[in-house]
Every structure is written in C-alpha cells, then in structure tokens.
Amino acid sequence: MNISFWIARRYIVARRSLQFISVITLLSLVGIAVGVAAIICVSSIFNGFRDMYQTSMIAYDPHVRIHSADSARLQEYHDILSTVRSLPHVVAAEPVLEGRCIISVRNTFRIVQMHGVAVSSFQKVSGIARSMVAGDFREASANDLPRIVIGAECANAAELAVEDTITLLSPHFIEQALQSFMAPQGQRCVVGGIFYTNSKEYNEGYAYCDTGLAQRLFSAPTGSCTAIDCRLDDVENADDIAHTLQSTFGTSYSIDTWYDLHKDLYSVMRFERLASFVVLSVIVLVSVFNIFAMLSMTVVRKRRDIAILSAMGASTGVIERIFRTEGLAIGLVGSLSGAALGLGLCFLQIQFHLLRFDQHTFIVNAVPLKIAWIDCLSIVAVSIIFSWIATIIPARRAARTFIAEALRSE
Figure 1 (tube, helix red, strand yellow):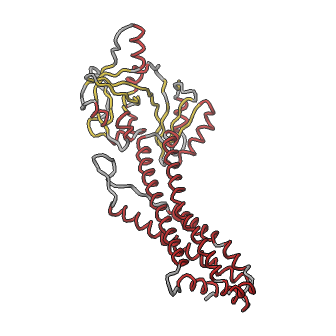
Figure 2: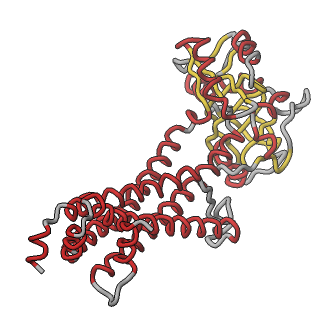
Figure 3: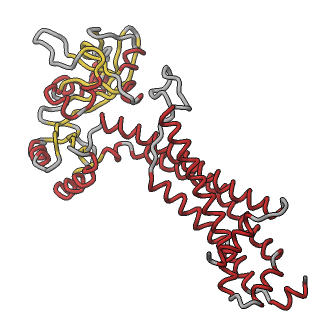
C-alpha cells in the first residue's frame, strides 16, 4: 500500500477520541454529500419540468415556422411552400392565417388567438387534432354556419358546448363598425369541437377555423397567409432545417424553430435552473472550505509527525501527497455518497411518486423528474475538483515544514 495513502487513511479513520478536527472532517463529508445530492435532485426536477413542457409544446406547436421579417402577410406563398416541402425531414408544410378574435356569447367575451388552416391539413401540422375531447373539425355544409374548434378551458369559462352558436368579433369587424357608427355585427359560427391539451395557454386562448372563415375575419386576400408551419420527422433536425431555409430565402423572411416560439419562457427556465445550481453550490463550497480548515489544523497538529517523516528521508512530495490524499479522499467519498443519495431519491420519486400533486389542480400527478447523467457526472467532478483545490495550500505548507523548528516546538 502506498505510504502516502496509508498515513492519510490513519489521519482520517484512526481517531482514539472525538476531536475537533475529526468533527470538522465529518461535517465536511456530510456537507459535500448533502450539497451534491441536493443539486442532483433539483437539477433533475428542473429537467423534468422542462422536458414535460417541451414535449407538450412540440406536440402542438410547429417544429419550424416561416413568416415575413416585417410581420406582413405572405403573398403568393406557393413557391415557398413547394421549396419547403422538397426539403428532407419535412413531413408536412401548410399555410396558416392568424389573428386575434373575440368570442361573444350571452354577454360573455373571451379573447382567443384564431388560427385559420385548411381542414384537410389540420391534422398534419398540429397535434390539436389528436387532443379533441368533443366534436370534430370539419367543413360546414352549404347552408350551415362556419365551425370552429376551441380549448376546453375557454369553453368552460364561456359555458359552451359542441353545436352552440357564438359570434366572432375581429379587428376588421370592429373597424367597420366604428367607420359606420354602428354596433359591430360580427361573424356567427358554431362550436364544432373542443380540445384539451397539457398546455393552459392552448386550452384558454387558442381556437381554430378553416381558411375561408379566417380570410373573412381578418379581411385577408385570397392566396395570403400569416406564416407557413412545418412538421419534421425528428424535432432534433429543426435547427438544421431553419438554417437551410434562412440561407435559401434570405433576410426577407424570419425562420423560427419550436424553441424560438417560446424563447422567453425557456430562457426563464434556464435561468431558474442556473440560479438554483449556484445557490446550492454554496453548500458544497462551505464544505470544501471546511476541508481547507481541517487540513490546515491537521498540519499544525502533526508538525512533529511531519518532522519525523522528513528526518527519516521522506521527500517533500511524499508529505504533500499525504495531505492532498486526505482532502481528496474526503471530497471523493462525500461526492460519491451525495451522488448515490441524490440518485436514490430521484429513483424513488420516479418509481413511487413520493411527492404528489392534486390532479384536480395540476396536469401531472407527481413532481416530474428526468435524470441527466451528464449533469450528475459534472456535479460530482466539480465537487471533487474543488476538494482537490482546497488541499493545495495546506499540503504545500506541510511540505515546507522545517525539521528543526518542528521538533523544537514539540
């Protein structure tokens, strides 16, 4: 067994009595373990929520969206559509006409973001079609009123059911009413279907209609659209496709990926995750400082041992390795113990749902977790590196101890 490791182990383990230095050693080990476990658990929780939200958004949002850089409508978009559909990994690409509308029914008003899409392509570009809980999305008959699809929370707030008649007011109708000094008439239509998703934003504020109704609501000329929505075979290809489209169409068009559509929210989630990591890292740093303090006091207390080892021929490198090994061992055991504790708690939550939510209030029944192994390895590695850094000064101080002075002080 290496002499440095053997002596370091004796300094850590072989204590005849509970001394102050051994208490600091224990606190350092426990502090590092708790800090590492806390960071792993919190990081997994943030990853779980981010993954849950990302999955729900990808299911309903387009993977790539093309729109005009100056927010104007796209005119004669058929050439753009043909180019997009010819690209690899593009499963579907369809024009969308969007705008704000007011749903008016029985003196109740709800503002929604209306999406005008072709009924035949509704299921290709949006996951809403797979989230219908009542009714369906189809074209109206010749003598019937136009049909729209709304979210469940919007329908609940306005007390609407399938086949109920409502009135839609758009900025175009309101402008016409102001110019003619008359009350806005609006567009009467029928609730054709109700959808429910994992996104409160969609359930409360999104609605869908066919392209013809959207053109009347927003006074849009035939052959124009707000954007072109694309669905890919794999969402991981979104950045490559967006880069290709931007190079093809130039700066006149803006290309957004699914991440860009909710960039502010994702940025906030990333900042919260980073802030939590920094705050919890303080626990590890305090424990690492304890290692520094413990080793410094050990060097003072073991000056006689150091002098004897030097007199017996031990080099400064051997003495330095003794104290580096001692501090690194504490950091290593604490980091690995914390990783085991953190991962154990995460697996218990995943398997048994120890932390539950009220299903009547939340869309999930328990705190979601996603273990990112690269994050766990990074946390353990950083903890061990900090522990090693804390040993440098005390170890060098021990190696520079003069034999005569150390023996004289004893």
